[in-house]
Image 1 (tube, rainbow, N blue to C red):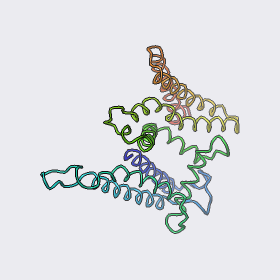
Image 2: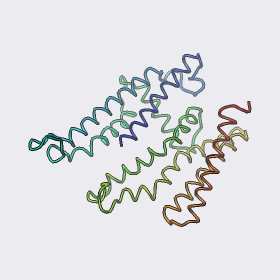
Image 3: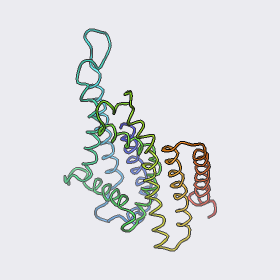
Image 4: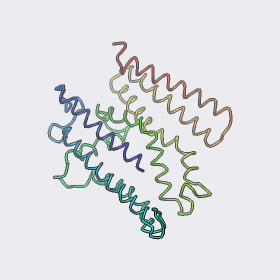
Length: 268
């Protein structure tokens, strides 16, 4: 959970840096990202909100340690035999719920523009391929493809808090959540690439620019790789293993060539 929260917080700080860079270079990011001229946020508001969430994350992390580790009077060490270890597993999920709820909680005087902007972008990304695709969703969803590991963490998190108590923990004989993560991590990891694939294909249909179709092929190749890898996780065999490695190589080369030629502008 901590890795998931820190990854999302880091993305918020990076978003602040992007807005700050645009403002310093006198780029009208309200126009570039197609934001509302009256309801958008500034880089400072975004940074303040991210730092507030970081403070709460640190606070709940301390509470987690305090709940799970308590001074044992019979020994010169800390142990979970005393204290409130049963509260520890609920600390970080509580922070995650507070954070998600803060995006839509109607308190207009507490970073309302920032929270509203984040919520609108996330909702717009999540309900693709329906609705219009703005550059800001194009930009944010591209970041989502770097969140494959946090997506796997979220899958483990959901299993951990919904499975039976005796089978959810990592050190249990059954290891049910580790088995769930191993078998179903790939379909969860596909979600950001599916979003990007929908965006690029929708942009191709909207503009007719073939570059969007070529970009769509990059995400389509990763989707094929994830499907093959998922099949290998469910039905292990040498043929699927070799095929997944080949498809992974093809997808990575495709993405690398596209990034070099288009994103880095070597052909411009």
